[in-house]
Length: 177
Image (cartoon, rainbow, N blue to C red):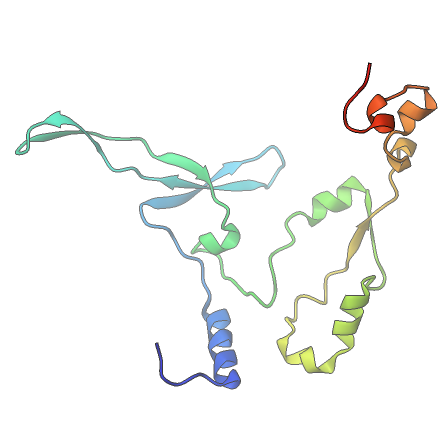
C-alpha cells in the first residue's frame, strides 16, 4: 500500500487517463464470433472458448488425450470485448436498436427532460467538467399510452366485473371451501 494518498486532482487525472486509453480486450483461449440473427444487420456476439484436451488413458510416459470441441457462449461484454472496435466512453454506445424502436411506433420523443433530478443536475454548472458530451445529445423517449384498454385496468378487474369470487381476496392467502 502506498504511503502517500493521491490528491483529488491526481485521482481525476488517473481516471481520465483510464477513460482515454480504454480499449477492447480479448480473453485467453477464446475468440469472438458472431451469429446472424433474424433481423437484417444484427450480429449476436459469441465467444468461442477453446478447451484443453482431456486425458483418456495411456501411461505416465505416453499419455493419450482426446481433443475437445470449442464451446460457444454468449458474449456479454458488448463492444468492450471486441479489440477491433474503437471505444469512446464519452460518446457512449452506438444506437443500434434505434431503428427498431422507431419502426415499432410505440414510443414518443420527449421535448424536455422529465426527471426533476436530471433537471437539477443539468442546471448545476459545477458538474460541467464531469459530463460526457454524448449524453445530452440523444433525445429521451417514453412509451405511448397502451393501445389495448385492458392494459389500463387494475389487477382483478376482469374477475370483479364477471362476478368471479376469489376467496383468497376476502379471507387472506388461503382459499376456504
